[in-house]
Image 1 (spheres, rainbow, N blue to C red):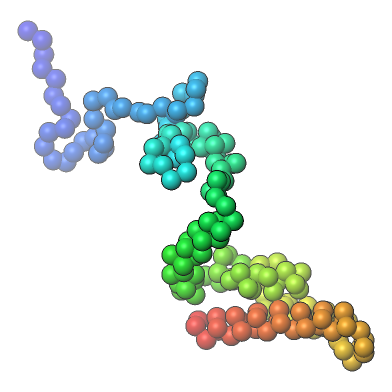
Image 2 (tube, helix red, strand yellow; image 1 turned 180 degrees about the horizontal axis):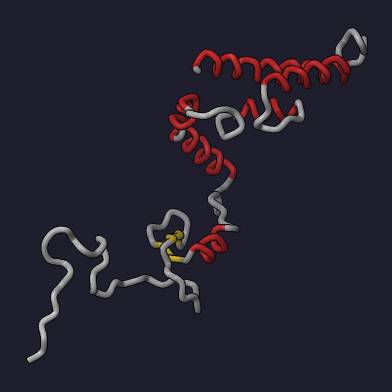
Length: 177
């Protein structure tokens, strides 16, 4: 008579980890021909289609590299869809000021990033460096230094506007924190 084997699954505490059973599990393979990796990344077969390919991470990245969301749409439809998406996602843009962290880690707005580009600074720069850089750049093109030079005046206004945007953002952060 064969000896009965005791199961590890009875009673308490449970001796094996959750999800570790003896039954076989079905793993869907990547839909790319010849690939043996698990296909756990869905990719649409066509625009606005519910059907999906299931690729491994490598082939999903390859598939999405040249994906054009606006393919087959004329200019007016592209603009309408872009506008609709921006209005749907407006809540995310409005909530960006609830960030937990400081500057340089994604907490700067697009306007702040453009202002930093004008001043040729990195995203994680301190405000004291911003002020110092702004003063140095503004002094070179100030209307008192270069009277009558319209290009210098336009450049000065650009620097001034960039500094005002960054100063207002810094004041908001100080007030909030």
